[in-house]
Length: 206
Ligand code: TZP
Ligand code: MG
Image 1 (spheres, protein in one colour):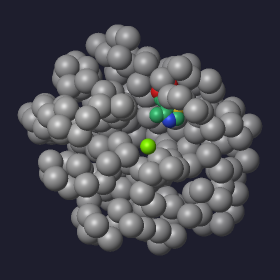
Image 2 (spheres, helix red, strand yellow):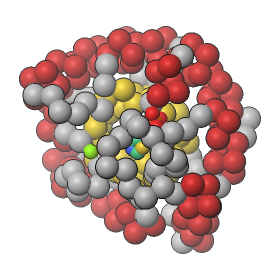
Image 3 (cartoon, rainbow, N blue to C red):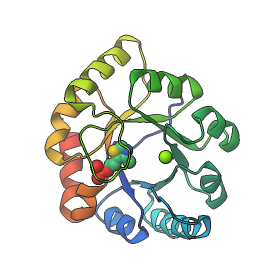
């Protein structure tokens, strides 16, 4: 099943509207709002603020974890983790137009999301990162090579996005594996004005 929506090659993950603004100013066109341990009303306010920023810059906004919130605020889509609502249920609730991404740690996760009608998959973690608690097993470059090779052999064209502790220097080797793009939080939050163009350059030239 191929859903064929345009998926950015550089996803920025943040829990703060002001960080989204700095990143959009630096050229980010895809933001995932990833809020943990906040009451729903606070989460919704953050989503609305981030949505206004994304709309002003023409960037996409995806909401992590919460399918209902994505629908309620009118975001462009949702990203569901392995313990969140399954992609198939999210698709039933949100309809065909909204973007649905799913987290994968294994080839089996990719198969599940693909059959369920995901628009893209976030595959990781690449390496250890303090950004996410309860990390799944680390894949490393070899993990991506194995999984992406199998996907190609199986004819899976679903866009696959690498995630987890990524820096600009990681991009060339990762993109060689056949990945569609990457998702980054810390490196861009640290210095959006230099990192966004540097990631973009590495993605275009590899
Ligand atoms: N899922 C796997 S690793 C990760 C998520 C949300 C965190 C990515 O952030 P960073 O700071 O780029 O490692
Ligand atoms: Mg989640």
